[in-house]
Image 1 (tube, rainbow, N blue to C red):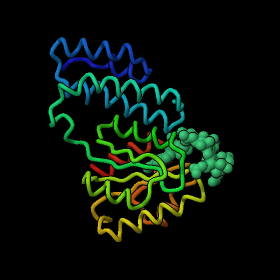
Image 2: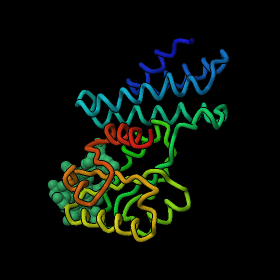
Image 3: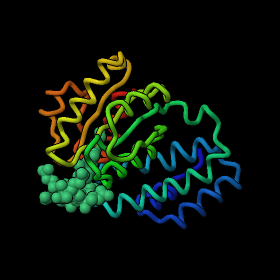
Length: 210
Ligand code: B1M
C-alpha cells in the first residue's frame, strides 16, 4: 500500500501548495484516486475535526485545512469513480429563517463535505419550506440547521414541524448547532443530534449515516 501520510500531514498543516503537488505526484505515479481521497485526505480531515473538538486547532487553521481539502478534491474529481464517493450521504445545510450568520455554518459545510458527504448549502435566512423542497429534490439523508440568535432558535422548531407536516421527518436525520443551541434544546425539538462545533458535526453526521 502506498504511503500517503505526507499528504495527510500537509493537509493537517493547511499547506495547499504542498498537498496539491503531492496529490498530483501520486496521480502521476498511478496511485488510485479513491485511495488518495479516502486514505490521504479524508483521514486527515478526521484528525482536523478531532483536534478542533479538543481545542488543539483553531478556526483559521481548520479553514486552511478545509480549503486545502477542497483544492485537492478538485484535482481528484475527474479521476474518482462513483464507488470512491459511495459511502457518502447527502446533507442539506442552512442557517434558519431570520438569521444571517453564516461563518460557522460555512465551516460545518466544509467539514462535512471534506468528510465525503455531498452538500447542498442553502445559505442563510432559509425558510422551513425551502429546507423541505431541497430535501425532496436532493433526496437528502441529513439536514443540518444552524442558528446564532436566541430569537431564531424557535425557527428550528418550525423547520422540524415543516418536516413532520411534509411527511419527511422519518426519512431524514436532523442535526442542529450554533452558539445558543445545546443538547437540551435539540432534545426538546426532537432533533436527532446536536453538534457544538464543525468537527463534531462531521463526526455526528458520519455516525448517523453509518
Ligand atoms: Co451577530 N450576533 N448579529 N453578526 N454576531 C452574535 C451571534 C451575538 C452573540 C453578538 C453579541 O451580542 N455578543 C448576538 C446574538 C445574541 C443572542 O441572540 N444570544 C448577535 C446579534 C444580536 C446580531 C444582530 C441582531 C445585531 C444587530 O443587528 N443588532 C444581527 C442579526 C442579523 C441577523 O442574523 N438577522 C447580527 C449581525 C451580525 C453580522 C452580520 C454583523 C455578522 C455576521 C456575518 C456573517 O456571519 N457572515 C455577525 C457576527 C460576525 C457575530 C459574532 C461576532 C460572530 C459569529 C461568528 O461568526 N462566530 C457573534 C458573537 C460571537 O459569537 N462571539 C454574533 C464564529 C463562528 C465560527 O462560530 O457561528 O458559533 P459559530 O459556529 C460554530 C458553532 O456554533 C458550530 O460550529 C461552528 C464552528 O465550530 N455551529 C454548528 C454553527 N452552526 C452549526 C450548525 C450545525 C452544527 C454546528 O449543524 C448541525
